Image (cartoon, rainbow, N blue to C red; front, side, top):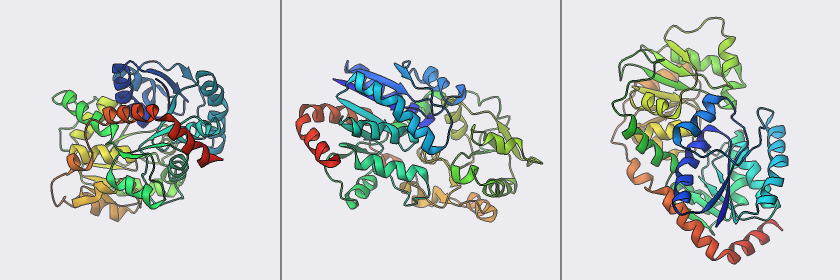
Length: 366
Protein backbone atom coordinates (compact mmCIF):
# COMPACT_ATOMS: atom_id res chain seq x y z
CA UNK A 1 0.00 0.00 0.00
CA UNK A 2 1.28 3.47 -0.86
CA UNK A 3 0.23 6.70 0.83
CA UNK A 4 1.32 10.26 0.20
CA UNK A 5 1.36 12.45 3.31
CA UNK A 6 1.29 16.23 2.91
CA UNK A 7 2.78 18.35 5.72
CA UNK A 8 4.11 21.87 5.93
CA UNK A 9 3.56 23.44 9.35
CA UNK A 10 4.65 22.76 12.92
CA UNK A 11 1.48 20.94 14.10
CA UNK A 12 1.52 18.73 11.00
CA UNK A 13 5.09 17.62 11.64
CA UNK A 14 4.02 16.59 15.14
CA UNK A 15 0.99 14.65 13.90
CA UNK A 16 2.88 13.00 11.06
CA UNK A 17 5.65 11.76 13.37
CA UNK A 18 3.50 9.10 15.06
CA UNK A 19 1.59 8.08 11.94
CA UNK A 20 4.78 7.72 9.86
CA UNK A 21 6.21 5.55 12.62
CA UNK A 22 3.15 3.27 12.48
CA UNK A 23 3.14 3.08 8.69
CA UNK A 24 6.82 2.13 8.69
CA UNK A 25 6.12 -0.57 11.28
CA UNK A 26 3.58 -2.06 8.86
CA UNK A 27 6.06 -1.80 5.96
CA UNK A 28 3.84 0.53 3.95
CA UNK A 29 5.33 2.85 1.39
CA UNK A 30 4.92 6.47 2.48
CA UNK A 31 5.87 9.40 0.28
CA UNK A 32 6.29 12.45 2.52
CA UNK A 33 5.82 15.89 0.95
CA UNK A 34 6.75 19.07 2.82
CA UNK A 35 5.18 22.17 1.28
CA UNK A 36 7.53 24.48 3.17
CA UNK A 37 4.73 26.54 4.69
CA UNK A 38 6.89 26.74 7.82
CA UNK A 39 10.51 26.98 6.70
CA UNK A 40 12.41 28.54 9.62
CA UNK A 41 14.70 25.88 11.19
CA UNK A 42 13.05 26.20 14.59
CA UNK A 43 9.57 25.87 13.07
CA UNK A 44 10.42 23.05 10.65
CA UNK A 45 13.68 21.07 10.43
CA UNK A 46 14.15 20.85 14.19
CA UNK A 47 10.93 18.78 14.40
CA UNK A 48 12.20 16.31 11.82
CA UNK A 49 15.47 15.97 13.75
CA UNK A 50 13.98 15.80 17.24
CA UNK A 51 11.03 13.51 16.44
CA UNK A 52 12.93 11.19 14.12
CA UNK A 53 10.78 11.99 11.07
CA UNK A 54 12.32 10.80 7.84
CA UNK A 55 13.46 13.41 5.35
CA UNK A 56 10.65 14.26 2.93
CA UNK A 57 10.87 12.83 -0.56
CA UNK A 58 9.77 16.23 -1.84
CA UNK A 59 10.22 19.73 -0.43
CA UNK A 60 8.09 22.22 -2.34
CA UNK A 61 9.76 25.28 -0.70
CA UNK A 62 6.68 27.47 -1.02
CA UNK A 63 7.46 29.79 1.90
CA UNK A 64 5.40 32.82 2.93
CA UNK A 65 2.79 34.59 0.81
CA UNK A 66 -0.83 35.68 1.04
CA UNK A 67 -3.32 32.89 1.72
CA UNK A 68 -4.44 32.70 -1.90
CA UNK A 69 -0.97 32.88 -3.44
CA UNK A 70 0.51 30.41 -0.97
CA UNK A 71 -2.28 27.88 -1.49
CA UNK A 72 -2.09 28.26 -5.27
CA UNK A 73 1.68 27.74 -5.31
CA UNK A 74 1.32 24.64 -3.16
CA UNK A 75 -1.27 23.20 -5.52
CA UNK A 76 0.79 24.03 -8.58
CA UNK A 77 3.88 22.29 -7.17
CA UNK A 78 2.04 19.42 -5.50
CA UNK A 79 -0.11 18.29 -8.43
CA UNK A 80 2.74 16.86 -10.57
CA UNK A 81 4.15 15.09 -7.52
CA UNK A 82 0.86 13.36 -6.72
CA UNK A 83 0.28 12.55 -10.40
CA UNK A 84 3.74 10.96 -10.68
CA UNK A 85 3.62 9.04 -7.38
CA UNK A 86 0.09 7.62 -7.93
CA UNK A 87 -0.60 6.86 -4.25
CA UNK A 88 -3.51 4.75 -3.05
CA UNK A 89 -4.35 7.51 -0.57
CA UNK A 90 -3.41 11.11 0.08
CA UNK A 91 -3.29 12.03 3.79
CA UNK A 92 -3.66 15.60 5.04
CA UNK A 93 -3.53 16.87 8.61
CA UNK A 94 -5.33 19.66 10.44
CA UNK A 95 -6.45 22.97 8.98
CA UNK A 96 -3.61 24.93 7.39
CA UNK A 97 -3.19 26.11 3.80
CA UNK A 98 -1.10 22.97 3.31
CA UNK A 99 -4.16 20.93 4.31
CA UNK A 100 -6.40 22.72 1.83
CA UNK A 101 -3.88 22.49 -1.03
CA UNK A 102 -3.39 18.76 -0.48
CA UNK A 103 -7.13 18.18 -0.31
CA UNK A 104 -7.92 20.07 -3.50
CA UNK A 105 -5.11 18.41 -5.48
CA UNK A 106 -6.29 14.96 -4.39
CA UNK A 107 -9.88 15.88 -5.30
CA UNK A 108 -8.94 17.16 -8.75
CA UNK A 109 -6.83 14.06 -9.46
CA UNK A 110 -9.56 11.76 -8.09
CA UNK A 111 -7.29 10.13 -5.52
CA UNK A 112 -8.94 9.07 -2.24
CA UNK A 113 -8.28 11.52 0.57
CA UNK A 114 -7.94 10.92 4.31
CA UNK A 115 -8.26 13.92 6.64
CA UNK A 116 -6.61 13.54 10.03
CA UNK A 117 -8.38 15.82 12.55
CA UNK A 118 -11.64 15.97 10.62
CA UNK A 119 -14.79 17.57 11.99
CA UNK A 120 -13.32 20.34 14.12
CA UNK A 121 -15.34 23.54 14.01
CA UNK A 122 -14.89 26.91 15.69
CA UNK A 123 -18.06 28.16 13.90
CA UNK A 124 -16.13 31.30 12.98
CA UNK A 125 -15.77 31.60 9.22
CA UNK A 126 -13.65 34.71 9.54
CA UNK A 127 -10.81 32.32 10.43
CA UNK A 128 -8.95 30.97 7.37
CA UNK A 129 -8.50 27.69 9.23
CA UNK A 130 -12.26 27.21 9.50
CA UNK A 131 -12.68 27.48 5.73
CA UNK A 132 -9.80 25.03 5.25
CA UNK A 133 -11.45 22.51 7.62
CA UNK A 134 -14.86 22.68 5.99
CA UNK A 135 -13.63 22.37 2.41
CA UNK A 136 -11.23 19.54 3.27
CA UNK A 137 -13.90 17.56 5.09
CA UNK A 138 -16.33 17.88 2.21
CA UNK A 139 -13.90 16.39 -0.34
CA UNK A 140 -12.51 13.64 1.93
CA UNK A 141 -13.45 9.96 1.82
CA UNK A 142 -11.94 8.99 5.18
CA UNK A 143 -12.70 11.49 7.92
CA UNK A 144 -10.60 10.75 10.98
CA UNK A 145 -12.22 12.67 13.82
CA UNK A 146 -10.26 13.15 17.06
CA UNK A 147 -13.35 13.26 19.29
CA UNK A 148 -17.02 12.35 19.29
CA UNK A 149 -18.01 16.01 19.15
CA UNK A 150 -15.99 16.40 15.94
CA UNK A 151 -17.84 13.43 14.43
CA UNK A 152 -21.13 15.01 15.55
CA UNK A 153 -20.20 18.21 13.69
CA UNK A 154 -19.74 16.21 10.49
CA UNK A 155 -23.08 14.47 10.96
CA UNK A 156 -24.79 17.85 11.30
CA UNK A 157 -23.28 18.81 7.95
CA UNK A 158 -24.61 15.65 6.34
CA UNK A 159 -21.30 13.76 6.34
CA UNK A 160 -21.71 10.26 7.74
CA UNK A 161 -19.87 7.93 5.35
CA UNK A 162 -16.22 7.29 6.10
CA UNK A 163 -16.29 8.98 9.52
CA UNK A 164 -14.46 7.40 12.45
CA UNK A 165 -13.43 8.64 15.90
CA UNK A 166 -9.75 7.71 16.19
CA UNK A 167 -8.32 9.93 18.91
CA UNK A 168 -5.63 12.52 18.41
CA UNK A 169 -2.04 12.04 17.23
CA UNK A 170 -0.83 15.19 19.01
CA UNK A 171 -2.34 14.01 22.27
CA UNK A 172 -0.67 10.62 22.00
CA UNK A 173 2.68 12.23 21.24
CA UNK A 174 2.50 14.81 24.04
CA UNK A 175 1.75 12.01 26.49
CA UNK A 176 4.86 10.19 25.31
CA UNK A 177 6.93 13.38 25.26
CA UNK A 178 5.86 14.36 28.78
CA UNK A 179 7.25 11.11 30.15
CA UNK A 180 10.47 11.68 28.18
CA UNK A 181 11.14 15.25 29.38
CA UNK A 182 9.99 14.81 32.97
CA UNK A 183 12.94 15.68 35.17
CA UNK A 184 15.01 17.37 32.47
CA UNK A 185 16.02 21.04 32.96
CA UNK A 186 13.84 23.76 31.52
CA UNK A 187 15.10 25.47 28.37
CA UNK A 188 17.77 28.10 29.03
CA UNK A 189 15.37 30.90 28.02
CA UNK A 190 13.25 30.10 31.11
CA UNK A 191 15.26 31.22 34.18
CA UNK A 192 12.34 30.58 36.51
CA UNK A 193 11.32 27.79 38.86
CA UNK A 194 8.58 25.40 37.79
CA UNK A 195 5.11 26.75 38.51
CA UNK A 196 6.22 30.37 38.83
CA UNK A 197 5.89 31.57 35.23
CA UNK A 198 3.29 31.78 32.49
CA UNK A 199 3.80 30.67 28.90
CA UNK A 200 2.32 32.59 25.96
CA UNK A 201 2.09 31.97 22.22
CA UNK A 202 0.42 34.18 19.58
CA UNK A 203 0.37 33.50 15.86
CA UNK A 204 -3.22 33.56 14.51
CA UNK A 205 -3.90 36.03 11.73
CA UNK A 206 -6.68 37.69 13.75
CA UNK A 207 -4.12 38.60 16.42
CA UNK A 208 -1.08 39.32 14.26
CA UNK A 209 -2.67 41.16 11.33
CA UNK A 210 -4.42 43.50 13.77
CA UNK A 211 -1.81 45.58 15.62
CA UNK A 212 -4.34 46.79 18.18
CA UNK A 213 -5.42 43.23 19.00
CA UNK A 214 -1.78 42.25 19.57
CA UNK A 215 -1.12 45.26 21.77
CA UNK A 216 -4.27 44.52 23.75
CA UNK A 217 -3.04 40.97 24.39
CA UNK A 218 0.31 42.28 25.60
CA UNK A 219 -1.47 44.76 27.85
CA UNK A 220 -3.42 41.91 29.43
CA UNK A 221 -0.27 39.83 29.93
CA UNK A 222 1.60 42.83 31.37
CA UNK A 223 -0.98 43.05 34.17
CA UNK A 224 -0.11 39.58 35.46
CA UNK A 225 1.88 39.47 38.72
CA UNK A 226 4.41 36.92 37.46
CA UNK A 227 6.81 36.54 34.52
CA UNK A 228 5.53 35.21 31.20
CA UNK A 229 7.77 33.45 28.67
CA UNK A 230 6.75 34.27 25.10
CA UNK A 231 8.33 32.18 22.29
CA UNK A 232 7.93 34.39 19.20
CA UNK A 233 6.42 32.85 16.07
CA UNK A 234 7.94 34.18 12.79
CA UNK A 235 4.58 35.77 11.93
CA UNK A 236 4.62 37.64 15.26
CA UNK A 237 8.28 38.70 15.20
CA UNK A 238 7.77 41.97 13.23
CA UNK A 239 5.16 43.11 15.77
CA UNK A 240 7.53 42.44 18.67
CA UNK A 241 10.38 44.22 16.92
CA UNK A 242 8.25 47.34 16.43
CA UNK A 243 7.15 47.60 20.07
CA UNK A 244 8.11 51.04 21.44
CA UNK A 245 8.53 49.49 24.88
CA UNK A 246 8.43 45.87 25.98
CA UNK A 247 6.42 44.87 29.07
CA UNK A 248 8.80 44.16 31.94
CA UNK A 249 7.26 40.84 32.91
CA UNK A 250 7.35 39.33 29.40
CA UNK A 251 10.44 37.35 28.35
CA UNK A 252 10.46 37.12 24.55
CA UNK A 253 12.50 34.26 23.10
CA UNK A 254 12.94 32.31 19.88
CA UNK A 255 10.54 29.45 19.03
CA UNK A 256 11.10 26.33 21.13
CA UNK A 257 11.73 22.84 19.82
CA UNK A 258 8.95 20.33 20.38
CA UNK A 259 10.43 18.70 23.50
CA UNK A 260 11.45 22.05 24.98
CA UNK A 261 7.93 23.35 24.37
CA UNK A 262 6.38 20.36 26.11
CA UNK A 263 8.73 20.87 29.08
CA UNK A 264 7.84 24.56 29.20
CA UNK A 265 4.12 23.75 29.09
CA UNK A 266 4.35 21.08 31.79
CA UNK A 267 5.94 23.44 34.30
CA UNK A 268 3.99 26.63 33.54
CA UNK A 269 1.44 27.89 36.07
CA UNK A 270 -0.80 28.97 33.18
CA UNK A 271 -0.67 28.97 29.37
CA UNK A 272 -2.00 31.85 27.25
CA UNK A 273 -2.39 31.03 23.56
CA UNK A 274 -4.35 31.40 20.34
CA UNK A 275 -3.09 28.02 19.10
CA UNK A 276 -5.50 25.10 18.91
CA UNK A 277 -2.68 22.61 19.39
CA UNK A 278 -1.30 24.35 22.47
CA UNK A 279 -4.80 24.51 24.01
CA UNK A 280 -5.03 20.77 23.58
CA UNK A 281 -1.55 20.12 24.97
CA UNK A 282 -2.29 22.27 28.03
CA UNK A 283 -5.47 20.29 28.65
CA UNK A 284 -3.73 16.92 28.41
CA UNK A 285 -0.90 18.09 30.66
CA UNK A 286 -3.34 19.49 33.24
CA UNK A 287 -2.18 23.10 32.97
CA UNK A 288 -4.83 25.88 33.06
CA UNK A 289 -5.16 27.62 29.69
CA UNK A 290 -6.41 31.03 28.60
CA UNK A 291 -7.35 31.15 24.92
CA UNK A 292 -6.71 34.51 23.26
CA UNK A 293 -9.64 34.08 20.89
CA UNK A 294 -13.42 34.31 21.15
CA UNK A 295 -13.97 30.77 19.86
CA UNK A 296 -12.24 27.41 19.93
CA UNK A 297 -12.49 24.26 17.85
CA UNK A 298 -11.47 22.26 20.94
CA UNK A 299 -14.65 22.76 22.92
CA UNK A 300 -13.88 19.77 25.15
CA UNK A 301 -11.05 21.74 26.77
CA UNK A 302 -13.58 24.25 28.15
CA UNK A 303 -15.06 21.63 30.48
CA UNK A 304 -14.57 22.40 34.17
CA UNK A 305 -12.70 25.61 33.35
CA UNK A 306 -9.37 24.14 32.28
CA UNK A 307 -9.55 26.40 29.25
CA UNK A 308 -11.27 29.80 29.18
CA UNK A 309 -11.98 32.01 26.16
CA UNK A 310 -10.72 35.52 26.92
CA UNK A 311 -10.31 37.06 23.48
CA UNK A 312 -7.98 40.06 23.46
CA UNK A 313 -9.54 42.12 26.25
CA UNK A 314 -6.88 42.88 28.93
CA UNK A 315 -9.34 42.64 31.81
CA UNK A 316 -10.78 39.35 30.57
CA UNK A 317 -7.27 37.94 30.19
CA UNK A 318 -6.37 38.86 33.78
CA UNK A 319 -9.66 37.48 35.13
CA UNK A 320 -9.26 34.22 33.19
CA UNK A 321 -5.77 33.72 34.59
CA UNK A 322 -7.02 34.17 38.15
CA UNK A 323 -9.75 31.52 37.98
CA UNK A 324 -9.26 27.92 39.14
CA UNK A 325 -10.50 24.81 37.27
CA UNK A 326 -13.54 23.24 38.89
CA UNK A 327 -12.69 19.58 38.42
CA UNK A 328 -10.10 17.07 37.19
CA UNK A 329 -8.97 16.90 33.58
CA UNK A 330 -10.95 14.29 31.61
CA UNK A 331 -8.55 14.04 28.65
CA UNK A 332 -8.31 10.26 28.93
CA UNK A 333 -12.03 9.89 28.17
CA UNK A 334 -12.18 12.66 25.55
CA UNK A 335 -9.28 11.42 23.40
CA UNK A 336 -9.05 7.67 22.67
CA UNK A 337 -5.54 6.20 22.81
CA UNK A 338 -3.45 4.62 20.02
CA UNK A 339 -4.68 6.95 17.29
CA UNK A 340 -1.93 6.06 14.80
CA UNK A 341 -2.84 2.38 14.99
CA UNK A 342 -6.54 3.16 14.55
CA UNK A 343 -5.83 5.35 11.52
CA UNK A 344 -3.64 2.72 9.87
CA UNK A 345 -6.27 0.04 10.48
CA UNK A 346 -8.93 2.19 8.83
CA UNK A 347 -6.72 2.98 5.85
CA UNK A 348 -6.10 -0.74 5.45
CA UNK A 349 -9.81 -1.51 5.57
CA UNK A 350 -10.61 1.34 3.19
CA UNK A 351 -8.02 0.14 0.72
CA UNK A 352 -9.49 -3.36 0.84
CA UNK A 353 -12.88 -1.95 -0.18
CA UNK A 354 -11.42 0.77 -2.37
CA UNK A 355 -14.08 0.51 -5.05
CA UNK A 356 -16.71 1.73 -2.59
CA UNK A 357 -14.58 4.74 -1.64
CA UNK A 358 -13.67 5.61 -5.21
CA UNK A 359 -17.35 5.38 -6.21
CA UNK A 360 -18.37 7.67 -3.33
CA UNK A 361 -15.53 10.02 -4.17
CA UNK A 362 -16.36 10.26 -7.86
CA UNK A 363 -20.00 11.07 -7.22
CA UNK A 364 -19.03 13.64 -4.61
CA UNK A 365 -16.92 15.74 -6.97
CA UNK A 366 -18.67 15.19 -10.29
